[in-house]
Image 1 (cartoon, helix red, strand yellow):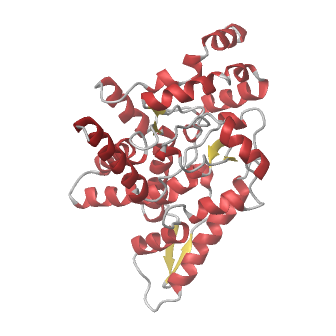
Image 2 (tube, rainbow, N blue to C red; image 1 turned 60 degrees about the horizontal axis):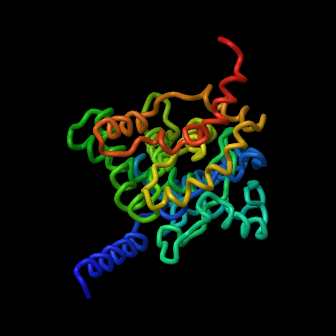
Image 3 (tube, rainbow, N blue to C red; image 1 turned 90 degrees about the horizontal axis):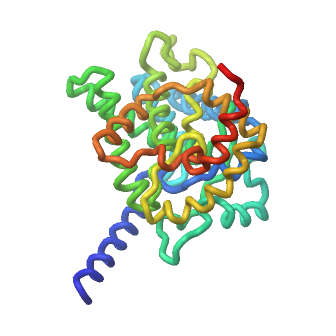
Length: 337
């Protein structure tokens, strides 16, 4: 066997090991373009109720003990109510419950989705796409893959633990948060994203960071979610995921960065959605997203990496950049300022 062939075999083996050994919430890509013109109903109430029930279940077990544990320990036990080995419990629930509408909606449509999504073209040995894309749901007015809930509870906890370790080393809160985000970006680039599937998901990173904020909010700040009263932990107010979800969780709005091998397959399928940019409902959703737009900490760090030449510019992969004719028509239709 030649040197080049041995190197290729070794690379494939490493990618296979990465796919098997990757941390929880590593598995699925998702395609919100598929749901653009027929989106699912908003499921915020159902998702909030599920989170609330799981948190209260964790608190019930915590409060059954003789001595109340620390707030961090309570947060850890809440995390384990949602987390599993690979697919997170909250993600599996969202993919199966009748309380949450999903696109695709039926097994028959799922079969079409596998072929029609932007990830429908797969190679014969495509480890990163061995698991089907996750379906799209709508939460807090945002289309997202069910995988984002997994990232929120699982990768969010890993961000939170990195943040806590950095704080123990003496870093200020802002620097500790940045450390957690930068480490998460590195993991996404080397293990979970581009190295396996060829997809570097900025939406995943946003959900990770939002999860860290949630775990911090459980115990930190002037008004934490958790309070200890008479030796018992309770929620100070009902959980509301709307505090954490943003348009950046929608991968049709917050573009992925693709490895060239994946982009060659994704781009032709992305172009098939150019005409959808002119759909009134799609235009309204994107306008609503734009009204909520603000630079997130993750976006700021990604912009720095792009400026340093360490990451391709995500703008290259946006539907606006790749559909110039439709984008120009939209610009001409806008009212004069």
